Amino acid sequence: MVVFVSAGCSLSGNEGSVEISRYSGQSVFLSCSVKCTARHEPDSKFRWKLPNYREINHTINPTELRRLYQGRLHMFDISSGNFSLLISDLTEEDEGLYSCWSDENQHKNFSLTVKGCTLSETEREPETKYTGDSVLLSCSCEDPNTKPEDFRWTHVESSGTEVSSETPRYKDRVHTFHKTTPSNLSLLISNLTEDDQGTYRCTVNHKTSADTRLLVKGETLHCFSSSCGRLNFLMWRKKYNLCLMVVPRNLNDSTAATVLFMMVSWGSAGGFLLKSMIISTVLNMFSSRLLTLHQTASCSISCL
Image 1 (cartoon, one colour):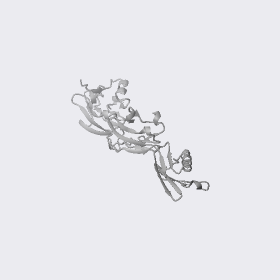
Image 2 (cartoon, rainbow, N blue to C red; image 1 turned 180 degrees about the horizontal axis):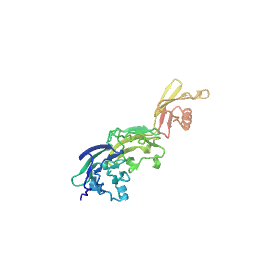
Image 3 (cartoon, rainbow, N blue to C red; image 1 turned 90 degrees about the vertical axis):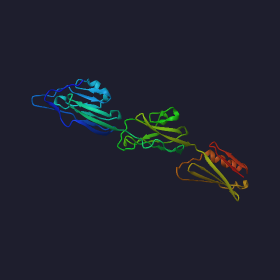
Image 4 (cartoon, helix red, strand yellow; image 1 turned 45 degrees about the vertical axis):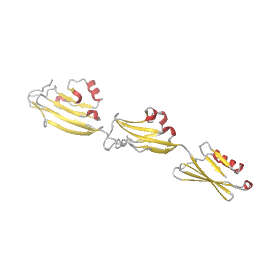
């Protein structure tokens, strides 16, 4: 069914189709107005045909109009002949053909294209980190002008647990960047634990996604031992740190010996050596010429 306007009125501007392209999150103004002769006034009975076979006219209930576009569509003063539409916060679902009709022979088409987020990568190289580290999980749109209306990070192995500050296990440990740079959907996780290991999925608008595999290594110690003359040298490396302990090899020298402990740290700094390890090492060194030290951190030192 097509509704007519009063005789003596016609659509302004060129008829036919107007191509319009916008990014998601932007607004679009669809201009449609009626010009009438002095003896005629615009008839309020007009219609817009929208994508997905929807229609609106002056009789549409305001509540229904808000429901259709979640309060994103604005209509102007129809009595003055302005039948234009303003749609804000565009989504990809708004894409399609919009037609402003005045009668069977007069209508104006707008072909609206809404550019959404196309992920720059859908498969990424695995990330390897240590406990206590931070990791940046990359996820971004190819076009920096894109503003996705919805995205989320999930931990696949935890039944799709959402990774956000609202989730207790990630509270105060995650940060995103989309508020300042809408096309940057990357996720920063700090103070990693071994439980954080797994596959992280970045999903945009409930349809496109990208996975990143994260491997979190524990605090494993790599230990070495050597001797030179009457001294034993114990060396062990943990993460980015190197420790060296020098102790007397001859038990008789123990009363006059000074135990030197020196730690050289580079990369990620941190006092990783527990006091219990130092004490246990020294006691075992002075208890036997053959030393085997087992630590709770899976470290084994053997000296002859």
